[in-house]
Length: 200
Image (cartoon, rainbow, N blue to C red; front, side, top):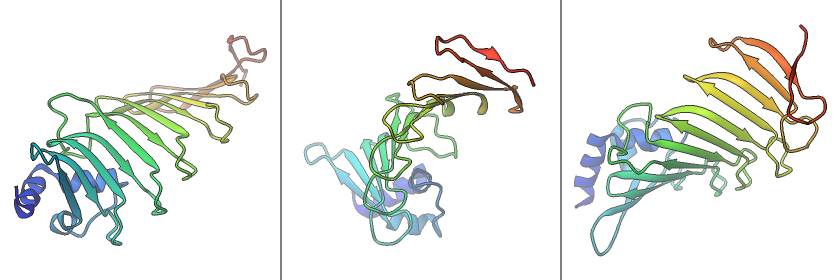
C-alpha cells in the first residue's frame, strides 16, 4: 500500500480523528494536515500495518504512537507535555469491531494508565466499559500506594473514596446522587472497613 493510498484509507476510517483524540483532543487544521503528520509502520513479512506514529501538535516531534493489528488499534501511547516521556497509555480490546474510531466515543478502550506527574511512572488507572469510564484508582501523593478511588455510573461520579491515613485502603467516602450531586460523607474511623455516615 502506498503512502498516498494509506492516507486516503486512514482519512476514510477517521484515523486523523483517532490520532487527534489520542493526543488529548488537540485539533488539527484539517484532516489532510493531520494525515501528513502520520507515519505508518508495516510488518515486513505480511505487509500488515503494525504501528502509527503521529505528531499531534505539529512541532515536528512524534508524540503519539499507535500499535496496530492491521486497522485494529491495540495500544496507544501519548507524550502529552512534549518532554519525550510517555504520559498516557491506552489499551483497547481485541474484538473484531475495535477499529479506528470514527466517532468521539471509542468503545474499544478498556483502560487508560496515566503518569499524572509526567515522570513516566503510572499513578492513575482508569477502567472503561463500552467506552464509558466506570472506575478510577490514583496515587495522588506519589508514595506508591493508591489513595483515591472513584466509581462512575453512566459517566457520572457516584462514589469517591480516600485514604487520608496512608493505610493503603479508604477511610473516607464521598457519596453522590445519580445526577452527580454530592449527598453525604462516610468515615471508617478504626480502619476495619466499617463506614458510618457523618451527620450533616
